[in-house]
Image (cartoon, rainbow, N blue to C red; front, side):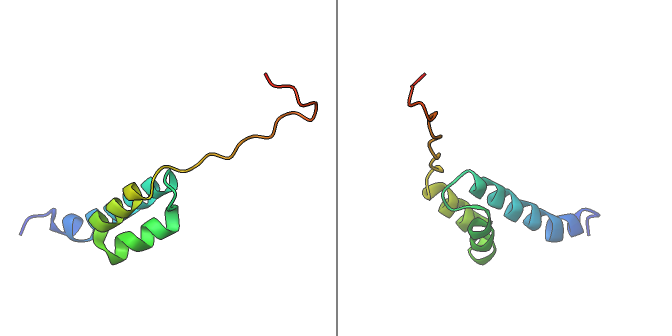
Length: 70
């Protein structure tokens, strides 16, 4: 067997699952749901779910109390 086989068997799936979870932080789905979905549905399914969830909506920053807009 190749000396890299433990890497491809154990480490690569963990890295891909974590990469999908990090992608989920920028999407509506979030980190933990993306992580769980990528474990249950394989990283490909978690990636598709994260991409289809759409980008995260940004909260509006409250304007100054004086009400002036800049």
